[in-house]
Image 1 (tube, one colour):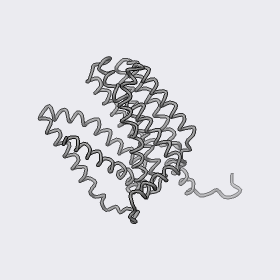
Image 2 (cartoon, one colour; image 1 turned 60 degrees about the vertical axis):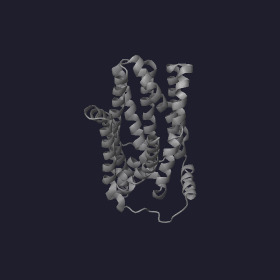
Image 3 (cartoon, rainbow, N blue to C red; image 1 turned 90 degrees about the horizontal axis):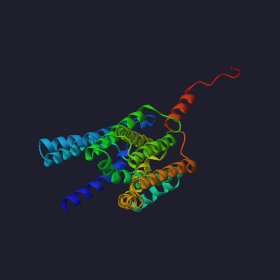
Image 4 (tube, rainbow, N blue to C red; image 1 turned 120 degrees about the vertical axis):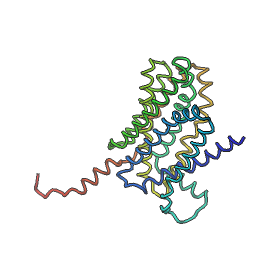
Length: 317
């Protein structure tokens, strides 16, 4: 009972942390550095996600489970100390309003931007059709067709390494239509991972597929955060990120509950192919119907450069 309550408390804290940590980024870096800053954040998150199971396993083997949990608690304390210098940032909004007013204001920001509402719906569908399949069916496929739990651990490590590469790539490469590129990048990564679970190719191929899966998700995640930070007003940004977290994760519990019975009824391969088709259709629908904002950060840089350049004299070729 106590552990359940602590997990619930952790979830509440995370719900506050996610929108606040994302909304503060534009106030810490210049607009042209948003993509690099978010890419570095993704790299840090991916590296800890990849290394944490390894470090935890070593601590449990050398000491005991209590020592691993204590070390985990220490990392939270260290993280809190690391963000203490940020307390000097003052909120841009000084008027205190009700929670209902904040809720309505955030909802209006999303409804006024179609690309926001469709993007959040897309993320929610991704949670339902892909993450549930990978989380629930992945370990079973690894147990039946590869080397069991050790193989699944290697695939998760490949996912983490791919995420690290995706975060690094996001800090280095920019395009004029970055969010469109992000949507398109999700598709091959998703198809690669689900195809490996459906048809179980040789294990090295599966490792590469899961690395591509992690890379594509982190790339999109970074570009999505940059789009919100670039085009949503600062006073509304935390509210929009809060809605982003709620809507994006809304269907994940349903996915975890449904994917098992669906696989039992249709079979693993057919269920995974269905999830692939669903995501492919959703990606094409978002790109066709949603007017994704331009210019992106990269285009804005080009525009600023052109404005700064002296205009040619009249009569010159």
